[in-house]
Image: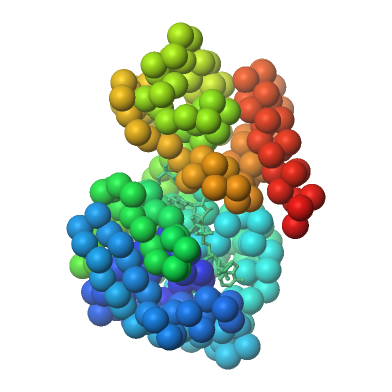
Length: 308
Ligand SMILES: NC(=O)C1=CN([C@@H]2O[C@H](COP(=O)(O)OP(=O)(O)OC[C@H]3O[C@@H](n4cnc5c(N)ncnc54)[C@H](OP(=O)(O)O)[C@@H]3O)[C@@H](O)[C@H]2O)C=CC1
Ligand SMILES: CC(C)(CO)C(=O)C(=O)O
């Protein structure tokens, strides 16, 4: 199996780097500046378990051929359109696309461009960021890639992919209910992103304020209602574990959107929060807290876009 990883940022660099470390046939599709950096210095991962550098295969869009069985797509939502253009030449008749973007809107965008049968369900759980030298810094020990067919079947291509993913230094999970997994992750991630971005603090800092727990719960209940109306509702045990995680005393948890926002970078406000509001509107679910958070995030994002 040959895997193309699109992007060597926080997520692509981490999972692609771990696969390269394990000796898998991985190639990174990179834009020219990042390609030159990785070709010259390699890709360094500052993992919680220690530092390592790999010298992976790198390709740029102009040299791309349809010779990959799978594509791990790891760009931000606002780079999706240009990434689809750049990776199009790599998509052959038997290629499976696995996007790890947060939210779920990208599945429709990818299916419209490449065909629904090419796009599998997938998500990642990791806390990583890029430092000023282009190294991938891991901020917490969890590291998981989950993938599966949208209809829940365990297909031959998913079994082959699963065999390829095993043996690298992260948990690789073939799911027979990826739609539920995606909604569970979106529920957790969006609540985490909403509350930490609005309050400019970690879960522990919010919990320590008067009304902090009630605020988190109010946001969580709105998003939970949307997830429950999705047709792939989150499991009840997951719902309660996540509620406890989101209100845990002293917790340093925050989301990648919070790190981007506090770092002055663009955020995926539309993909992570705006799309939830759209779905709430279609399902007739009232979401006043979520609407306030979205407005707040858009003010920030509009300023970033005006400067660009
Ligand atoms: N970071 C995290 O902890 C987590 C992030 N996520 C989600 O994963 C997704 C990716 O996030 P993350 O990895 O953090 O983002 P990053 O910004 O760190 O990485 C994205 C990378 O994509 C590259 N890129 C953009 N367009 C192209 C292109 N056309 N061809 C090749 N490379 C391209 C950029 O490279 P360059 O600009 O240098 O060319 C950039 O390094 C997001 O949806 C995020 O919400 C999910 C779980 C955890
Ligand atoms: C769920 C979480 C918090 C870690 O994977 C995440 O997806 C993010 O920070 O973007």
